[in-house]
Image (tube, rainbow, N blue to C red; front, side, top):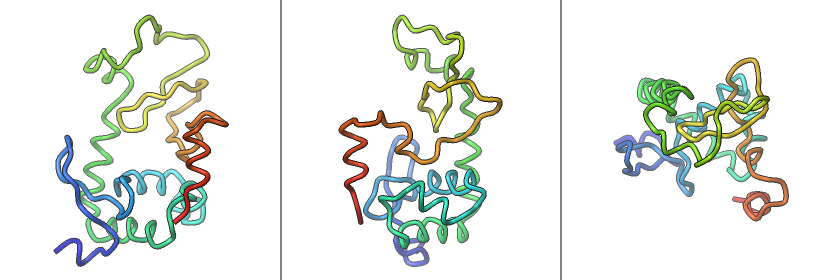
Length: 149
């Protein structure tokens, strides 16, 4: 029923249960909504952050959110509960061997449960766009730039 109400959104099962994903991608709807909110709900900034997604794909995610906000808001709340302290406490294996988490001048930024080392900032800021976390000139960065839909 939900797939008929929100064309362009499919469902997949994973460790976190059944979740809504954008058709043709592995990207969860909640991830796009988190980026949209981080961009002050500005659609053009969202498009700039996801150049490899088409406008209909992004609009499908926004449509799904408008139809089922409680589902996406619950997932966003669950993702926000993963603070750096909680990840260190519950997932100690997520810290690379020999790496100190008290490095001066760096802090952990969490995107979902993935830690990304960045210079310290005053408050938590989601990463937008995704390609910003790829090393410049890396194979993944070049592939991201080449992908078009």
